[in-house]
Length: 90
Image (cartoon, rainbow, N blue to C red; front, side, top):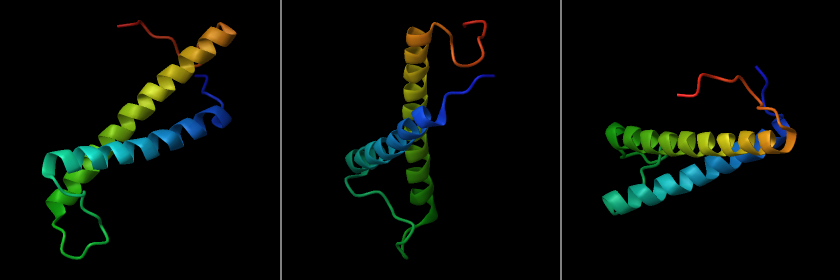
């Protein structure tokens, strides 16, 4: 399995994490009309913390997957070879 060079992947992963956190906070604010809970707050319940973590994790994973896919397609376009395993293409 051929992986992407870390020099290419690291900034993308970092950007996806930052953007995912911001989008998750914005989504939480729109749905609940308040800022997302923070683990440093003493009086916050576990359920809202878990909900915020699930939303943030989902946004991060989605953005990372999209960025990784776009980067791999760019490598394919430039080099003519797919950087990773080839599958059946479902």
